[in-house]
Length: 385
Image (cartoon, rainbow, N blue to C red; front, side):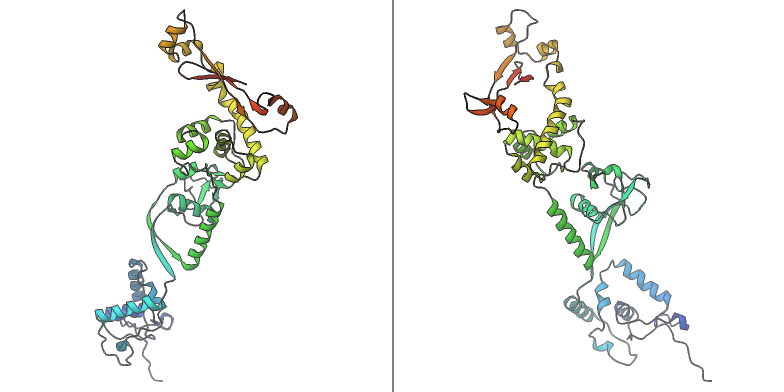
């Protein structure tokens, strides 16, 4: 029986067994070996696993810069079409020609983007880094897209977060301030994945509210002053004051307070406010205003506007001017108070009893006439209607 020689590796020329046979192919591996060995490489040449692993390590270091050559079936090079085993001369011009042809004819299936990312661990929270598998919840694709849009940080699929960072299956605003960045990395995204990512961005932008007070960075101080009549710092302080209110599936505490203040500031109808704040209808706006009013009467008024929130001695010592004490007092312990009143026109109420009580025969309109008591340095003490 005639002896047949075993096929050899085209790189190291080591003999290969039948279970080790692997062809070079017509992709980037063929070009890599041709440049490295400076000889003609055929598509049906064999290569061992050790030499192939060296190619894979080189390909990983290149970070996908030459992945588009894997889609090339044949290179238009005359020197590589010869059937003999003569040495092939690879020059700069040939490489430039190949690169130019690849850019024209081949569209890469994926791109690599430098980006910051969170930890890829599925055991810890991406926000607080706590390991609590019992209460942790896997972030959805839309939630990961929202994190990328707001923070510019890539979150790997399967990442988790604690339930304390969620409200009605939505990420809270405070959670974005505590997100942990692991390190800079490269995000390799394919064409199909990129198409899904763009569609998720469209969904997020479509759901974005016109007046998004849940996002503190949505408006500047001038925007807060124009809509709610308070600065951003004052608005945040007022939101923290109404501790008796809780977030609901309809609105957050910030949105509820903003709706109430916008009603007082702009005097818009409930129907218009429902459109601006992306609420269901005007009845929801009316219910929100009623909730905020009760919360302010419980948490804010007794400590800032009621007669009991300040003592007589404090008002005399800290909130009374010297000229008022000289002109209007005879004794050192007398307090000067300014009383002022005005008209506040209101809408016609559906409550017949309230409508009759608020109707003015003099102005022929429904109104409220509040009387405000203040000190001489404009510290509001109490308001009577």
